[in-house]
Amino acid sequence: MKKYIILTLLIVLGVLAGCGKKEEVAKEDVYVRNVINVGFSQLGAESDWRVANTESMKSSLSLDKDFNLLFDDAQQKQDKQIMAIRKFIQQEVDCIVLAPVTETGWDTVLKEAKDAKIPVIVTDRMVDVEDDSLYTAWVGSDFFKEGRIACEWLKRYAELEGIEPSELNIVDIQGTLGATSQIGRSNALSESAAENGWKLLESVPADYAQTKAKEVMQQLLRKHSDINVVYCENDNEAIGVIEAIEEAGKTAGSDINSGDILVISFDAAHSGLNMVLEGKIALDVECNPLQGEEVAWLIRDVTAGKDVEKYTYIEESVFSTYDKINGIVADKQAFDVTILTQEILDGRKY
Ligand code: GZL
Image (cartoon, rainbow, N blue to C red):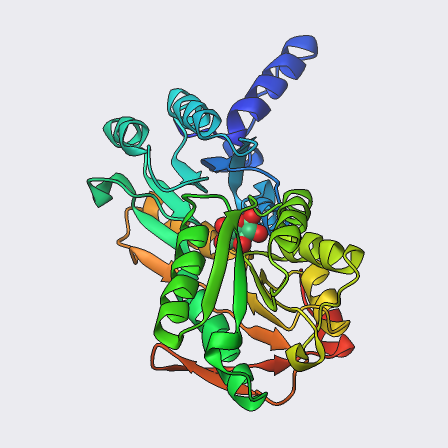
C-alpha cells in the first residue's frame, strides 16, 4: 500500500472546505509526495555499536528522505522480531529490513514476507536459511576476517616481543552465541590458535554486554592465574573485562613481558577507542555500524524494481597505540593499522 502524504492533506483540505466557503483546490496547489514505507526490525540496544547502528538507520530512513520508517526494538528476542515482521506484513509495507539477533529460525517468517511480495533486506548479522531468495540483499561486515586481522596482529606482536606461541594463554569473551559476528570472530580465534600453537584456555559467551563480560572475566581470573591475552568480541565486553582485571590488582596493557594482560577488542566505538588511547585495549578492530546510507539506497533500488548486489561489505579500519606494527596481512589482504591519536578519535562519527 503506497502511503501518500496527499491523503492526509486532502482530508485536511476537505475538512477546511467543509467549514468555510466551497472552493476548488487546484491540482497544482496540492503537493503529491510518495514515501517508501519501511519496517525495520532491530535486534536490540545491547551495545554502543547497536545504538550507533540504530541512529544511522533512523537518520537515513527519515521522512525528509522520502521514507516512512516503522521501527521495532526486539530487546534481543527472536520471537519479538518475528512478531514485528508479521506486523509489517499486515501493514503492507514496501520493504522490510531485518537485523537478526541470531542466524537460524527465519525460514517461515521470511517465506510469509516473500508470499506477500515484500522484499527483505538483511543487515549486520546474517540469516541461515534453506532458500536465499527469501532475502533480496545483505549489508554487513566480514566477521571472520575481522577476527583473522586481530589474530595476525597478535602473531606479529608475539614475534616482536619475543614471546613463544605456546606462552600465549588466551581467553575468548564471546558475543551472543549464534550471532554471525560471534561465529566469525570465535572461529577466527580458534583456527588461529590451532595454527599457531597458542593456548586457548576457555571461550565463554557474554552477549556483547559490559556487566556480563565483567562477571565472566572475574570467574576466569579466579580459575586461571596465567591469562595474558583476552579476546573480547566487542568494546562493551572489553570495558567490563578491564574493570575485572584492575579490580583483581592486575594491569591491562601492551607489555605482556612486564605482566600486562593484553586486551583485544572489536567495534572501535568511541568508548573502546578511548581505552585504546589509554593503552588498556591493545588492538581494536573496527566493525562499522554506519550502514543506514547503504541500506537506504538498496531500498530505493529494490522498490523501484532494479537488480541489486546480493552481498555488500562495509569498509573497516584497525586501531592501536602499539606503534611497532603499522600494517598486517590477513587472508592474503593487506590492512593498515592506524596508530590512534586524540585528533583521529575526535574526528570519528561514532
Ligand atoms: C557486529 C554486531 C555486534 C557488535 C556488537 O556487526 O552484530 O553486535 O560487534 C553488537 O557490539 O552488539
